[in-house]
Amino acid sequence: MFSRRKFLSRSALGSMSLALGSSCNAKENQTSVPEDGIFTPKVIATWKPNIKATEAAWKVIEQGGKAIDAVEQGVRVPEADPSDMSVGYGGRPDRDGKVTLDACIMDETGNCGSVCFLQNIKHPISVARKVMDKTPHVILGGQGALEFALSEGFEKENLMTEESTKQWQEWLKEKKYEPIINIENHDTIGMLALDKNGDLSGACTTSGLAYKMHGRVGDSPIIGAGLFVDNEVGAATATGMGEFVLKTLGSFLVVELMRQGRTPQEACEEAVMRIVKKHNYQDFQIGYLAMNKKGEVGAYCIHPGFNYAQHQNSTAEIFDSDSYVKK
Ligand code: SD4
Image (cartoon, rainbow, N blue to C red; front, side, top):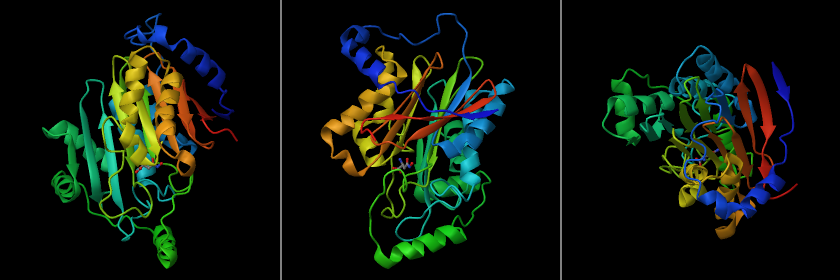
C-alpha cells in the first residue's frame, strides 16, 4: 500500500518543547525503551525516490531479519540504480569525471564500517559492511579500500553511464562549481531501521557532491557526521552539503540530544539550528532524519524540499520535512 501525505508541521510543537528544554535535559535515556515494551519495527530513508529502498529493507524486517541486514539490502537498491545520480552506479562524477563513493554502516552493538573515496565498485555499502565484519578498522579509503573490495570478491566496474557522462561533458563547458539546493544534492540515501527485536541500525551511501574536487570526502562515510546509531537511544542520518554536517558532527549531535530527552524532531531542529546560527546557510541544504527506540521519527532541514520515505506495517509513505526557511 502506498500513500502520500503532507508531513504535519511540527515546528509549533517543537518550539513549545524547546521552551521547556532545560527540564528535558535532565531526563537521561528517556527514549531507551517504549513504555509498553513493544517495539514498532520501521524503516525510514532520506528522499522520496528511496521508497524503493525502504521497501527492500522492510522485506528483511518483516521476515524477522536484523536491522543491519535490512539497511544494507535497502541502500543497495539506489546504489545499483543508474537513474539515481547521487549514489553508486550512474552517480555524478567529480570534476575529473571520476565517480568516487562514500558509504558507512553501523549496527546495534556500536560496530561500524566505512569506505571513502572508493572508485569502480557498485556497492560501497557492502564493502563498508565487510570492513566492519572482517577488519579491525572502521574506515578504508581510496586505493586501499578498492584493493580490499577486490580481495573480497567485488568486481571492478565502470560506474559512469551515458547520462552521467553527457551531463559531465556539459558541465565541463563552463566548469562552474555551484551547488543547487535540493537538486545537486538530491537522493543520497541515509537509512535507519528498527527491527522486531527493537534493535536499531543505519546505513548511508553516496557519490557525494557532483563535480567536487578529486579526493573530496563528505560527511556520508564519517561515523557521527552522516550517520550515527546508539541502540540505547536512537539513530540519525544526514543529507545535503556534507561540509556543514562535518563541521557540526550532526548525526552524533542528534543522537546525543535524544539521549538528553529531546524528541527526534526537537533533536533534528536543534542540529539544524547549530548550522544556521554559525554559517551562511542561504546557498546550501542540510536535512536530518532521526528515529528513537520507540520508532518515533523526526526530520528537519534548512530549506523546503527535503522529504523522506517510510515503511511500517507494510505501509509505504512519503513525508515532507518541516524546514527552517519557510516557503
Ligand atoms: C555529501 N552529504 O557528500 C553528501 C551529499 C548528499 O544528498 O547528502 N546528497 O556531502
